[in-house]
Image (cartoon, rainbow, N blue to C red; front, side, top):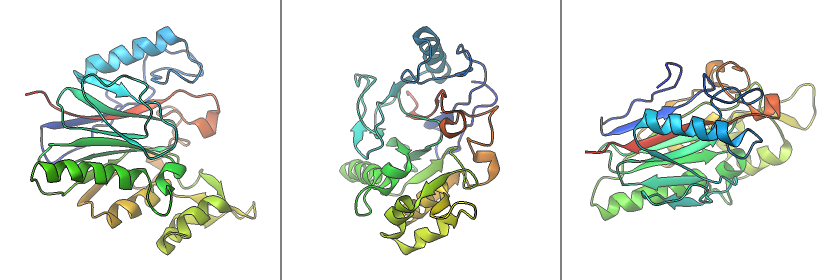
Length: 260
């Protein structure tokens, strides 16, 4: 694995995860270099080579979803095809990696302390907000806890937040703020009025996710703390950013159970 890739810590060695960067890879500008998105205009052979590299580095098969900014959650097996339409996924099978591609949206990885279930969620603002307070994180956590209940295991979960566009660069309109604050007043903390653009706000996507995870009773939340080092927009040498570049590659966050 490249030394710039992020490696979250988990309560058990049976769970492994990684968040890639744009370092190295086979893609040429503006997708340089480790672009994993096959839907952004990059040369198919370059994307395929990058995906093969990722598979070899992980030692397991990453499943790439077709993400649509919703909150459907797909169960993964070794036979789940790439392109399955969902914005989150979970698995109990070793050897298959729950994988989320992003270029400003927030990737969220989750597991339980025993490492029996792993999951990944794509949390853009639409999927995070959902409908009436039920979005992609609520759906993912519910699916994981249902599996743990079936196995008669405690429903404690850990989460890790990956890089996303930060609160100094994520400009949104009043409708986005209303979607969150209208449901929970505490979400107001994640929005700062844009002094130069009336009716616009700077939004803290990672904080909105942390608030939701805490309400769901997640025991530990690591990773993105909304500081500049986690911002995809501000760190052009490390991360892809659609808002910054408009034409952009995708990096990925993946989590899997080790084969025994």
